[in-house]
Amino acid sequence: MKTKDAKVERFHLDAPMHISGLNPLNAHLPCGPESLGMLWDIFHRDVLETVHGQVQSAVEIAAVTNCDYIVGCQVTQSGQIEGLASFTVPAGDYDRRIFSAGSFEELVEERIMTIWDDMRVWAEEQGLALSKEFAAEVYPQDTVSQERPEMYCLYLIEGNEL
Image (cartoon, rainbow, N blue to C red; front, side, top):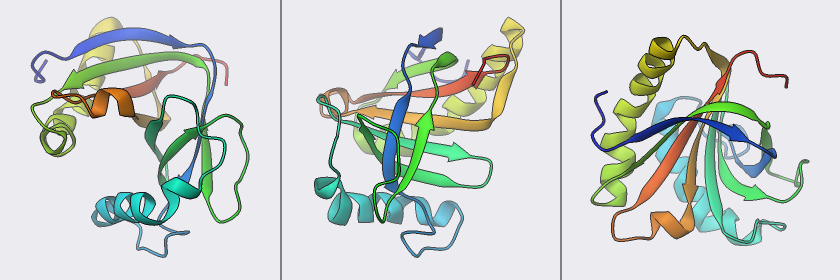
């Protein structure tokens, strides 16, 4: 494993995680990695405070699908909120990688880059196939605001019933 002090585990998500937020289309940005930081900026500046039904302990999530990227927050119910994109991370078994860094910037700009590769290597070593449908980055706000920020990534293990 490349990422020092990361905890890797097979994890069962008991209930779906519903996300409401922005994707490049509804934020009027070009599709591609160059828009990701701008999406988060727009979400925090213009959208976060207006999203109704957020879960009690605030959680921000980014989901990457085959052809889209959504940044947003976890909400209590699925469904489209007018003007926002939505996505549901289904219940099931996941490869979960929990990691921290000295600052939030280090967490999302340096550490996360090695996590995705680490997860694929770990799954291969375990004889597991990871779904190519989507992956998620989860930012529980109570851990992100700590002196040593923490987050986790999820990859759905294939063979789950969706």
